[in-house]
Image (cartoon, rainbow, N blue to C red; front, side):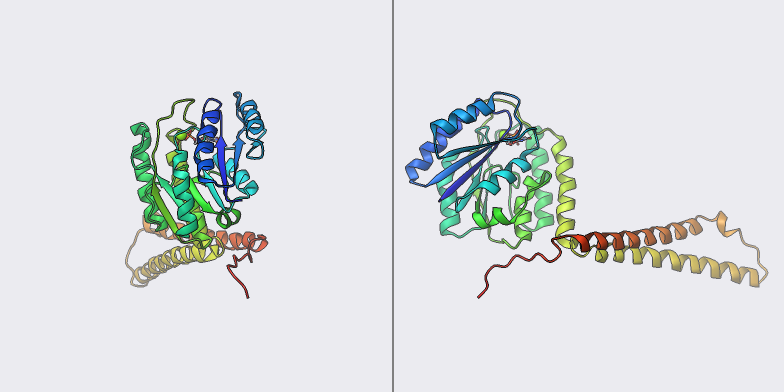
Length: 316
Ligand code: UDP
Ligand code: MG
């Protein structure tokens, strides 16, 4: 099959039929053999019956998966990815903010320009300022930390070579960082395409301002895992050693100084009455704890089934 279109959908009953009509118009004109996988993420409106109707109308094309409850966009994408059979996989929001007109060019970029992943870029964006401003900050930070030159990491419209989505596992709320996960897995040919973005006509946005803080925490996790996920001791051990040495030297210095004073019969305040003593002590305790954390993290890694999982590209 040429193309799978994965649509995560949460309470989007009005948009779905229109979206499908539009997708069909574009994709059929291109003559692409395709499927559309709609993942109903525990909707509480009439979405599922709409999906059933669509599956009947477009037999063999529309497939539906219904979650028992709302798990989030990443979960919906993950399940869609598992089921996708196309050589090219495109993800698209269900709310008709993303344009199906972009599909042919995205498919061409993957097929002919051999991109692993092409991300949409909502250059002109029809969302309130409360959304676009944090998004700018989010993208700048992610660009800096990841080293991937994308303008719009969180764009719902993306295209992948099948191998990418079968390799990368989207979990938690990591749908914002699929390009990072892909890069980490060795898919480095990542491209970008400016896409048209529409205003939301039906339903409401499912993400509020809290996405910024969640996104930031996830960014820290992703970049930490990418670097030290398989060797946590290198992180905790280095930090722990540094802290312990600082504390130990400070304590040694304080002790030596005290002895020198005593030896020369000079008077000096009690060490326990000086702040330096407590700072030195705290450094040594923190250093030890970081070290222990490192050992514990190594134990956890040792038990991981993925500790020896390598992604092999070719073998002869
Ligand atoms: N979505 C989902 N599960 C959720 C939240 C959102 O499947 O828990 C879907 C939603 O139906 C839409 C897409 O994810 O198709 C993007 O959501 P939304 O349009 O609310 O995000 P925004 O455009 O505001 O960034
Ligand atoms: Mg939207």
